[in-house]
Length: 64
Image 1 (spheres, one colour):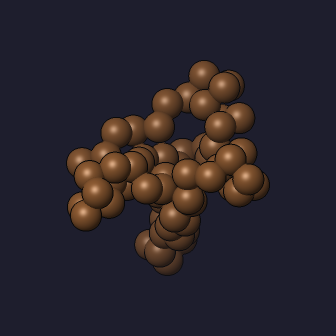
Image 2 (image 1 turned 90 degrees about the vertical axis):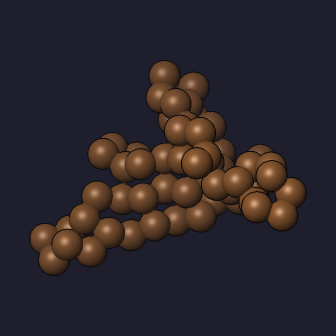
Image 3 (image 1 turned 45 degrees about the horizontal axis):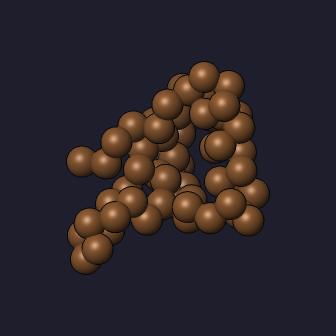
């Protein structure tokens, strides 16, 4: 599901806490890439998919 994607936490500058996970997909043939901001919320199905991806041995990159 996240093959060749960049999966990275986003830190809210107001709270200095991770607020979501940014998933950036590889660029298509036109050089355009899609990004998805996934809230850190276990009820969110996209976040559940990220948690499964992590359980499968992958790592979310730390925020800048």
